[in-house]
Image 1: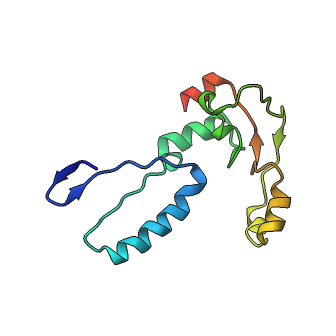
Image 2 (image 1 turned 90 degrees about the horizontal axis):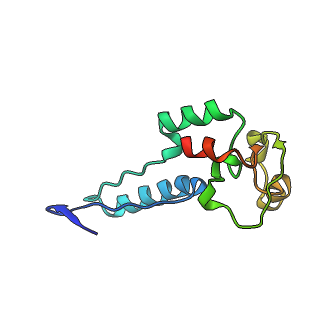
Amino acid sequence: MPSVGPRVWRACWSTATAAILPAQNIVSEWMVANPEVMVQLHNWWCAPGTWEKVRQTDPVASHASWMENFPWTRLPGVTQPDRQKPMLDLVGFRKLNPAKARAMLGDGNYGGYYQRADEEMLAI
């Protein structure tokens, strides 16, 4: 990591959207044992401009939907379903044990279309 001053280091960590919340918890616990350290995580999906563009594109979108289907993340030869999955009942979902949660999720999409036009994705 490059030093940017006395005992100041900067690093960039990129992660999938679902990993940011556990990462925040782990980093918070780590900072208790390392009080001289300050860490700032940025979830770009929650940035006002990004989220506004998502809502303009399609207000029914969530984890594993079109929001995570950029041209460079697609697998060759895989065709996505051409339908909009209803939004997941998050309140009910969070009460389930892991086996029941996986059964409820099925393919992992929390709600929304599986893919949008490349032009819409690149605008985000």
